[in-house]
Amino acid sequence: MKTLAIYNVKGGVGKTAAAVNLAYLAAESGLPTVLWDLDPQGAASWYLHGDDAKAPDKSVWRGSSPIGRRIVATPHHEQLHLIPADLETRHLDVWLRKDDNSHDRLASLIEPLSEQYSLVVLDCPPSLSHVADNIFAAADRILVPTVPTHLSLRALMTLIDYFKAHELPRTRLKPFWSMADRRRGLHRGLIEQPPKAMKDVCASVIPYAASVERMGETRAPIALSEPSSYAAEAYRALWAENANYLRRG
Ligand SMILES: Nc1ncnc2c1ncn2[C@@H]1O[C@H](COP(=O)(O)OP(=O)(O)OP(=O)(O)O)[C@@H](O)[C@H]1O
Ligand SMILES: [Mg+2]
Image (cartoon, rainbow, N blue to C red):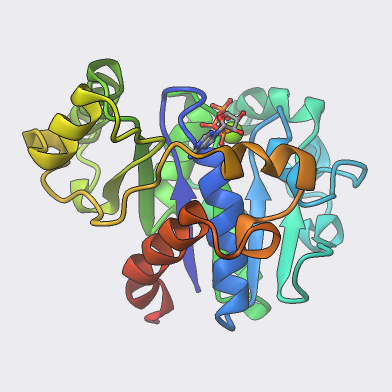
């Protein structure tokens, strides 16, 4: 089993859109997949129709209640399941800090999921908190959606510096261009000549597209709702690029 996090300290950059679409494509490709929504906004839970389900609460995070009971099916694919988030998830930072300052709590809750799943996709909240430290410890790969703008690049550089300062493996971080608008000179320029922080950027570029925004109406991955759209093609390419690594082991 592998764990894929979609993370950026910056908000509104396409993390949840990528998490939902990539998790769906993984399931469709035959990998039993569970998307774990770690964001109290619960956007991924909503896209996957799990917004009414019971999210892991303090009892799960403290180990007195099993995570398995919080897993729900999704209507989109039988191999795609969800661990939902709700507003209470906002206390996660406190629940995680209670016992000690270790960063391994999330990893230890993920571990038993390997009996049932080949892939865990983490939809992460936009913060560099104790929750993020747990995510960095648990994830095999961290995809970082990066909008081709200077502030977005700055957020990526902050993350790279954080990894250096905390001796975390930089190779786990894999940025990809997100919400890219090729009509804009700045976007085109940065994509054509990526700065050093983007040296190992994914080749697939997720475009700024109305079809992704429409996921809010359809509440479905675009590979299902608009399979022949340009954006659906881009997510398929992004999945294909990362699939080999995530399928191994
Ligand atoms: N490729 C895209 N093209 C156009 N709109 C997009 C794209 N990706 C996401 N959006 C829209 O931008 C908004 C933010 O997207 P999303 O929720 O995926 O970002 P996020 O990084 O998860 O945000 P947050 O930090 O709040 O969790 C949503 O309204 C979504 O519909
Ligand atoms: Mg989100």
